[in-house]
Amino acid sequence: MRRGMVRGIAAIGAVAAVVSSGHASAAHRAPGAVLVEESFTGAAADPRFIGYGAACLTGASRGGPVEEAANHPLGGCHPDPAGPVPPAGAAPRGHLQLTDAHPEETGAVMFDSPIPAEDGLEVTFEQWQYGNTTRAPADGISFFLTDGAGRLTTPGAFGGSLGYAQKLPGGRIGAQTVPGVDGGYLGIGLDVLGEYFGDGERRGFGCDRRSPAGTAFRPPPPGPNVVTARGPGDSVEGYCFLAATASSARTAGTRRSTLPGRLHGDLRRMPAGVTPARAEKLLERVKRTVRVTVSPEPDPVVTVDIDFQDGEGFRRVLRFRAPEPLPDTVKFGFAASTGPLTDVHLIRRVVVRELS
Image 1 (cartoon, rainbow, N blue to C red):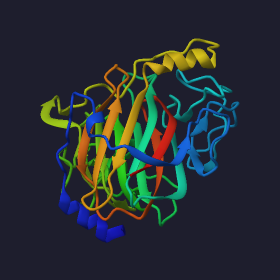
Image 2 (tube, rainbow, N blue to C red):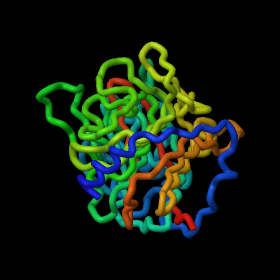
Image 3 (cartoon, rainbow, N blue to C red):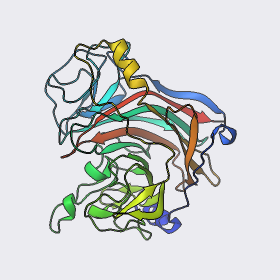
């Protein structure tokens, strides 16, 4: 895949997002065999998942301090939580916590074992973004696929790049560009703040077709509450914009989101001494369940469906041509971060299936 594929997908450009206010079930293809399943509700997880930075399990007892930019087996969360996080020692009602609401925190989890992709894939997971302790929430959560032929041990740049794409911090000339994830194939950004939509900070460098938000990096973020897809990339090149749930209409410099609901949930506090069962109930209403499918070749297509926990079930928010060629095998990961603005980022009940 590598450099030649990065150039090839750039020529495809952004394919129009398909947004539906109805259910997605009629067009959804029945999944096949389960390839990976991890609930993240216990005190331990499948050891093939590699933790990075602040990533931890709320099902386990609290552990030691966060070691930023360090890989580790998934275990207990650090002892000084910030924001309305779930209680520790909550198994079997735990969560994978990518970050709490500390500022400038990063977390990721990576599945560094190849999964066959020639028959297509369906990935379903629950995610939470809530509990900001600042005036606005940030940054967001990414789900990404990489070429299974390479290792997946380090995420990409954080902040507006959501742990998938590259980043020139602050867009400062002369600064060193932080590389994107190695062998990136597809990065879906569930972007509450809205920077991942834009090509500021050199996201999408080397791409023939750029984000409709442009390449400038300045406030306000160009696409809050937007799901954005980016394609293949390696190091500091590629990760081209593919599609997004953003309209051409602008208000005060930002694009209007076409999502039928909000990615961010309204939960600002967790009662002192809350039990795992009570916390689970409080979190249920701010959960968003996401389903990403990649159909097999020829003519592979990516779809993204979201259940906004509003009684409407899954709704189709994106449909676009998948980057080609589809790798024979893939690996996957999740990433999230905070900056000067904060949020709590959780993941649960990850299921990867063949499409057959």
